[in-house]
Image: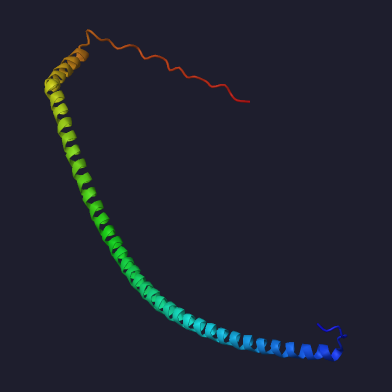
Length: 169
């Protein structure tokens, strides 16, 4: 070691060497980083290009699936419309058939009721069939009885009773 005082020049010379060495290292690092960054950039571009291609493929696939779904939904809509029309037709036919059946059942019930009423009437007719001749005989007897003046004398005419209403004030 040297005990001599260090001068500015000595420091500048020492620093100049360090400076050049530092600059060289920095330049080498800069070149190395640029190379690495360029490689990373290229790698990222390749990956992005691959992802872009994959995404485009998936999007095309999804568009195809969506188109197929639209077609399927349109077919289902048409089918449902046809089913609706068919159900309306069937329900209308069922309504007509039901009304006919109800009419037939009501007609059968009415016929049964008429037969039952006719049976009841015929029972009453049979039970009271002797009434008209009996009534005719009673009428003749009554008329004969009324014609007999010995049994029935005429009552004198009663004076008419006229009821007066009080006048309203």
